Image (cartoon, rainbow, N blue to C red; front, side, top):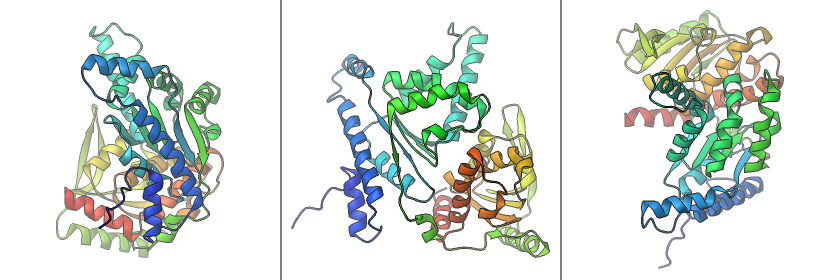
Length: 387
């Protein structure tokens, strides 16, 4: 009997196995990206010490590599082309014991928390290091020599202003970055405030990653779409009644009450909640001064969320639109079961597609469609069953 081939040794082999089994269509663009990811795997394998005979030996091995550039990969292209699937394959195979896969907004929320904690330590006299960036970068690298970001995007000026310094430190220590994005590096933070101060990060990024476009002709997310009655449009008495009926069915006789989620000296108000279900209006979430960290807190607390009355998003609602993009990204990454009523279908919500928000909202549209698919709903069921 012939032994089974080991498809875990490379992204290319696993992709071939999936196409040969009929699970995926043959896609030459995806295969090209898989080969590039395999090159990064080879780099990571070379970086790993052969044996940790002593802590000192491991330290010298690590220092020997920091002067070398170990290039990662930046994969950009339209939504639904398989970028996340390929990166997930790569991440599972990466030989590093210290590795981290995160949504970019989640990672940056963690960075800002670490910076705030360091500044407090300095204020209290617990450290003499006034600049928080070097120690924060050292801590991050101590936890992950490989960083994988899904849907890399920069929309927040606070993130934009620290990225160059933070990643200068991380790359200098030997950190390898693999990221997916809807935009090429030169279009990151496009039209952003004080963008000139952000541009050194773009140059730094292109030094430490190879950039590749994934131009698959097929949007695989749309092919998987199997609509469920969880996105109701337009907003009228009928859809309000349908939302109320779905909420009542989810409650199953239980009584929902307002609650609060504590957040660093303040609270996030939840108008209605019971167990791990919550109901908000669009105004509650996107017209209030909430950000990525707040949406993460909601995702940690609940696994089913109802959102009423998502309006058309015109230029006068730019801040609300940014929050909505981050909200959908966060809920998608945490497999939140989402019920919404909206003024229009996802592709028609944004009235003007321009600049960074136009790129970002293409992803939001795709994710809102996928969050209605049978496959996504199955993920949410599996998440609840595991809790």
